[in-house]
Structures are given as structure tokens and as C-alpha cells.
Image (cartoon, rainbow, N blue to C red):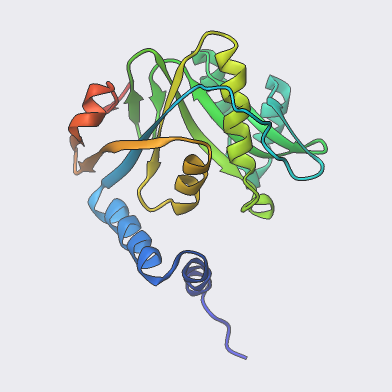
Length: 222
């Protein structure tokens, strides 16, 4: 029996979920990011309005602020895509993490920053008050497709709203259809695009006019 290459399997799975054209668009975008240093993100905002009803969570799942010791434990789990250096740096900046637990196991998380925050490869995100920035969200593969991240977003809205915060801003890669769907479900709206080209020592940021009005931008270094 001939085994299919892993990448082909992944592409077929994406086509089944998102359709051929969007899956192809995602692959082309990733190639441009890898070989041309192009990163393009949708920028989304959401007012922190208390929901009329509690979000539904799958049985056995609970949502709360993730404690420091739990974050450091999670950093030792390679499936969670988080290391101890990142955790220490984020906490030192005053960032905080919200997470979903299946029993005692962290299965989904999202970070929140109140000042400039890291993006990737030495690029940082800058934004203006009164926004806080939601970033670095991740769900275990075994728990995807269950709207757990949307439940975390609504919980964090209530938590931060009770402490005087009024709105959040976030960015999501234009090919990350799962994250965009979760953002839409939780009430975020797209305001425009922002990104940059980072290639052979050059760094060229760009953003649409609406994004500029919100004070959101990518910059090289903190």
C-alpha cells in the first residue's frame, strides 16, 4: 500500500473543511510568508459587552484565568506550543492567560496584553488605549471544532469588563480560517488589514486607513 505524504493528507482535510479555493489560498499565503517574508493579518475589534447568556461549554470543560504554575507546567507539553521563556516574558510584561481545562488538563488558551506584545521573529504589535490585545491563542487538535476558544473570549470579556476594560483588538492571519470563524462567533468585527514584508534586512510595515485610526501597527523590535 502506498502512503500519502503528510502534507497531501493535510491539504485534503482542509479542502474537506474549507473548500478547494480557500485551502489553496492558504497554502499560497504560507509560501509567500516563508519565502518572501510577507505577513498579512486581519485586524479585528470587539467591545466588551456582557453577553445575554452564558456561552455553552462541552461537558467536562471549564474556563478561567490560568495560574503561573499551570502555565509553566503547560510549557513542558510540546503539543501546547508554548515554552517557559515565552511564559516568563509574558508574565513579566503584565500579560495574562485565559484557558479552558478538560479536567486538570489545559486544552485551549489565549493571552491578553495591555501594552506592546510580541508577534513573530522579532516583530511586535503596537496599539492604542483603550484597547487590550488578544494574541497567541491555541487549541489542542483533539479539542478543535467545539468553539472552546470562543467561550474563552466571552469569559475574558466578562473578567476584564468587570475590571474597567472596554474593548479588545486582535489580529489573525488571513489564511487562518478556523480562528477567523471563532472571532466572528464571539462578536469581533474586521476593521481592515495590517502586515509587513521582512526580507534581507528590510522591514516594510503597512496597514489600511481604518487600522491606522485604531493605532494598530507592526514594528520591528519592542
